[in-house]
Image (spheres, rainbow, N blue to C red):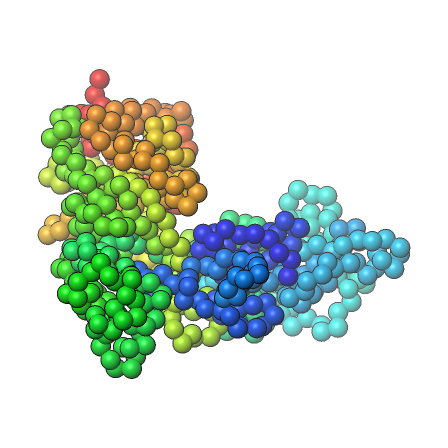
Length: 631
């Protein structure tokens, strides 16, 4: 295949299995499934040891029902005297779409998915011209995650069973600026424009392509093709099929689950031993012993890894062995509360850890003294934690098409990443090290605020639209209320302001929300942290901005900037007249005031309203921070 560089983090998102990208030479390719990773292109699997790329994240592995994670392989040239292990490893990409056409004469041709050479137009070559064919710009997909070449033959013949030996087809342009100006024509046969091939109902239950392809009016449904897995056979689907540009933004949405590293024990020394035991060299030895029914003992590990374990006592090693072999944590962790969904229960453990002090190799937390902050701002917050160091693990669990969210279970999503069930369940993941600031709101003040009838009335239309959309598109069920919209909008306002204060770009920052309205165990936290630590590193700017004397001016400027948007009064009025933004799931929030890069947002810039933060024009007193911005 043609070759092109891809960053390892991009193989988690946005170019993971099933995603398309354009190589430097213009070839469109699709990333192959996990069955083809950690293999040489020649088929020779010798000198490959994926354990070198192994990553252990005990909480995330338990939730996703996998044994461990692997970093995407890096490409290494093997030089003289270098070890041969894992040399010249690449991640395979396949040529897609397979249909090509000549930009001069329009002649179309379908080529194998593993074609390496450039394709010449045979008709132009016969006339003495050298013209290379390029891939067609259209493909077809469904909201169950399948993708395929656009059904050119079926479309032009208006039949689900077109002739097998059709004369040559041509893709021609009539000069129009819409899809009606593109047409496919059979030499000496029928022709048809591409008008309407991308049209579909908002809920995806009906599409123009499925409804009008067949002249008999029988729906043409998705056969369930998965070309990224290297197979031409469909798995059966039956969902409506829609045409799309291959470069459209909704062709691929990576489903990434992330986890902030939490130590398995409160003892920092034992936690350090656990980190050593999770290294591939030691973890493999431990797995061999446990697989043979032998419980590892400190003496056995010392014999094999004397230098690594020399600084630790037998008791510390034994505690680490017990924790690793049990697959859980040795300290008491708060579990999922009644009413929590899976994600809320998962984040509750992080929330309980972030409000306390911690000093571990991969997690350093220092709670700030709230009394040192200015009274007019500290009254709104319960905790401020300076996160000097954290580790985030991002694992690719699958992907969706058409819609960014789905209610399909994790097993279905993981099944889209590979064709065969592996002996050891694993997923690709990437590590990010960075810093951040963690804030929690004053629960008593927050509860009094969100129980106001004006607040509930303002958010009700937004919540109603979300739940209607969730049912129509089969999105996951979760709680959305004033608390969530307030925290989400506040996080965006702080991120936009931090770009002017701490030196990070907005794309290098990321939000992580901790929200629960459970009266027994409420959560109202915001973690803003570096999301691109491999590129920009840990500059220290975020932690510095969270200290007393710096956080207050930052908040003041963020809230002051939110009081007037460059699109006002239209922006604020849209929050009262029906909503705006993607799926109309924002109230008073637009690019001029509250939106951030989508890589920094957990919700694709939805569920935002600065009116809840500073108050709308007609009732400015109902904002949570209204008093803080008076004057």
